[in-house]
Image 1 (tube, helix red, strand yellow):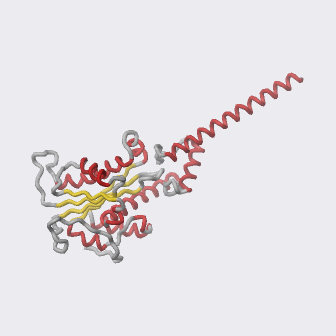
Image 2 (cartoon, rainbow, N blue to C red):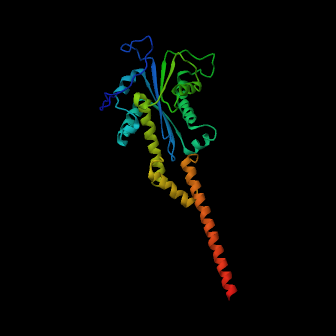
Image 3 (cartoon, rainbow, N blue to C red):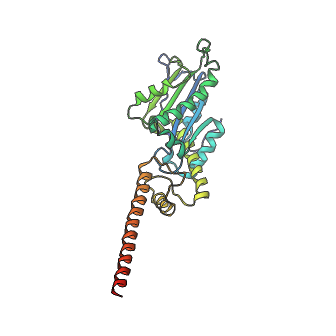
Length: 288
């Protein structure tokens, strides 16, 4: 197993142990540890990416020795390095939700529920492998594996968030499946930090693909002046938003409303100008 050369000795990682086990002799050989996080929840441009990293209990030491932390705290180059290490050594899965998909889903559910839907889709992809008879409730096999799922909670109510995830799992096995949903889990658990890095790198790569098509669009975040100027110019020239924009975002609606208002004002001005010219011509004819 690899060992990353940049060790982080200040890790807050504190993975759960069974109540009857002493942490020093706890056997992790029958344990699966899963971490999930997202990147691109708030931007007005581009996709949201949900990522899952799965390790065995035997890989716990290696993930703890890996100098991962919240993806925003790493440089782009370091994220790319860690991305290679993580994808080469662990089970990595992800879901890309394009802007138009997010907009369509927001017609019926809010952003939190969209995240929960994507999180559970990835978790269930693992559970299908661990519980091959999951479709038949009478034949669900008893497994010896303990599955711990760590998620960076997007809801203000961590317990309610965990319960919503649990309610959408294809298997109800509280004896073997434990969900730990916390705010700042990407800072407190390295398995979630790893998922954070995967999500961030994939999203950044998607943004680079967009730039090859649309030109310089910035990061996609509303705080990015390059992104906002790009959108303003695009709307001013075409009267609509690019398909990579999230139409349901307030920023998008405001930009469209502003250009509509400007066009209406221009029409009124043009109408008054035409009327004035007509009246002037009529006056000259009368004088003649």
